[in-house]
Amino acid sequence: MFDVQCSMFASQSLSFSAFQHFSFYLTHLMTRTITHSKILVTGGAGFIGSNLVELLLRQDNDVTCLDNFFTGHRRNIEPHLGHPRFRLIEGDILQSPK
Image (cartoon, rainbow, N blue to C red; front, side, top):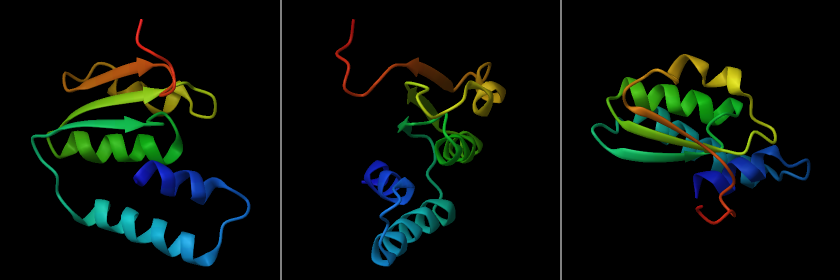
């Protein structure tokens, strides 16, 4: 659901209610502590995704970042590349595993 809200937030035809919905989820994620979990962040190299990755790593989670780098940037996740609880998968959610 978070990815859907991010896509809606990025679109130019964003309605106010969609923004409120996105804002609620982002606020909920920033105020809630999720610890010792395995979490997949799609679009993790984008602006929002990379900040979410950073927050989740600080909360002692194992984070897998899936990104095709279409709009995300490697520089956003470079600080995490050597982190023992961070894994990067370069690809698209629509691709089948090789």
